[in-house]
Image (cartoon, rainbow, N blue to C red; front, side, top):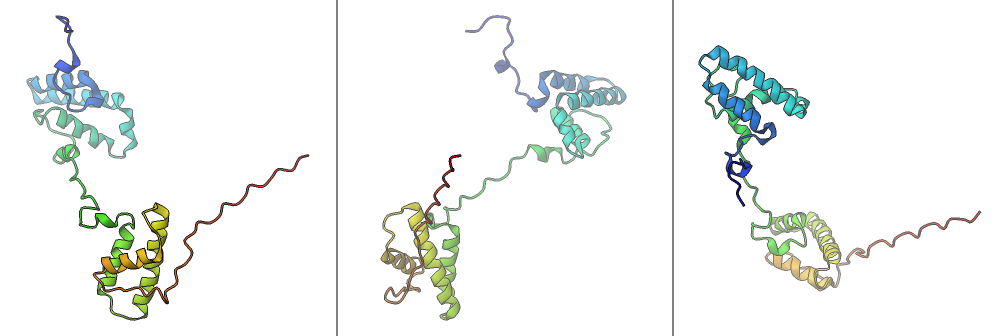
Amino acid sequence: MEIKGLDYNTQRERLIMSEYGREIQKMVEVAITLPTKEERLRCAMTIVRMMESKNPQVRESNDYQQTLWDHLYLMSRKQLDIDWPYDVSNAEKMMSKPQPMAHPTKDGQSHLRHYGRLITEMLEKLKTMPEGSDRDELVRITANQMKRDLATWGHGSIDDERVADDLARYTDGKIQLDLRWFRFGSTSPAAPSEPRRRRRK
């Protein structure tokens, strides 16, 4: 229901910086219209003091005065013609949004997410490593961690054949785990210690 004569916030122009409120925004718009630079500057300095009292947490920053003048510049839509006491040329960067980060599973490795990024990197390294003791040690570490991951996340079967199959598949057949000789470490979680019983006095 709309009542004639009432001014709804939803009908007003959207605030550039809502933390300062509509009154401050209106003062900025008045300052823009003042006839001389001196008047506009005096008005701007008053507005900045009011902005500081309106948003006191801004003082937590060492360069809060710079921040306040940057905010004023943005609120005036760059139309306030004064001799700015601070350099406001970088003010617009405050309003820019960071580029979205790429999702880590968008690299074709989403089928490995139950193993995690570390195992994915280890499998990639195993593809190119020459045979020798270093590769054998990395195979041992990788295989044991893969089995622990499967046990942790309950991702289907956690038998030795599953790990050996995954190792061969995700290294393009470079690593073939011989289960006749390979021994896995323990994957069972540690038993929780029993709480001590309090002695009755």
